[in-house]
Length: 302
Image 1: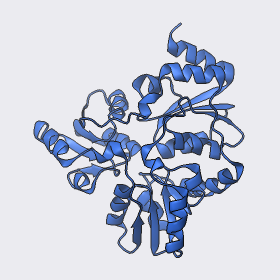
Image 2 (image 1 turned 180 degrees about the vertical axis):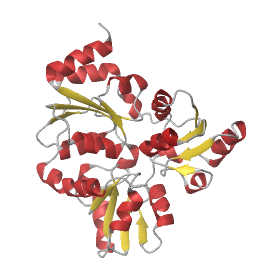
Image 3 (image 1 turned 135 degrees about the vertical axis):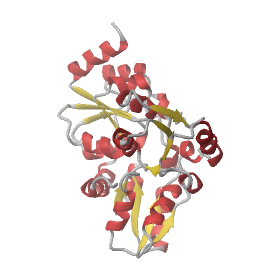
Image 4 (image 1 turned 90 degrees about the vertical axis):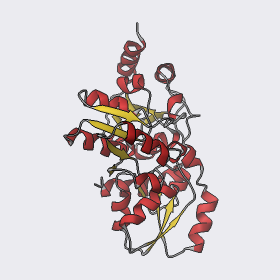
């Protein structure tokens, strides 16, 4: 029996559903019931009828699924798969920043821990960050933890003061202008699409700035046939599957090592044992649910 057949059998036996992020290994994407971005996975987590959610992504994503589904068993196959950017934001530091700027609303990227979410007014994703910040009546915004995304938001929201937390995604931050310029020279007919987690100078070189799901929609509707993709390289696997007649070029080195920690073997082990489960303090979970639900009410941006 193949690994994928074993997973299929176990899913039926345990009444489980597998959610996988766009940056997961190709073989993990193939066995998932749903593949998507942070917002898509958050929404999907609230709709599944299964008893068990196997979450193939990094830690904060599995936590969000548990927060939104407190009565379901949520299993994160590799608890060591932690988001480096989420780890850059700490609760004590955020509490102190809120004291300094008591008149500010806190907008937190979904790439944060549950404990940090419990200190926020509303969450956002890369697809709706601009829309979320615009929706708030406060003139002052604390934006955590991604400084690059916060700077991107500031381009479109001129009437608010945005206080930036000094965090970043290592995978996107290492995408530099030289790499993009080199690829543009090699593929002069290619459209450059980059993620808003990239540095401002990289965003300046792009033809379009999109979340991962936004990139998928953009490519699908475009009449162009070549694309330089400025995000984690595994998104190209899904792009190729959905657009077999188009060509995609990855940025060298754009790899998230923690996303790659989840393998077929770890998914099988998670299904067999239903461990390790995601456990969150009930008080934190209740407080963290509010900003997540507000984010989902806002929906996607452009």
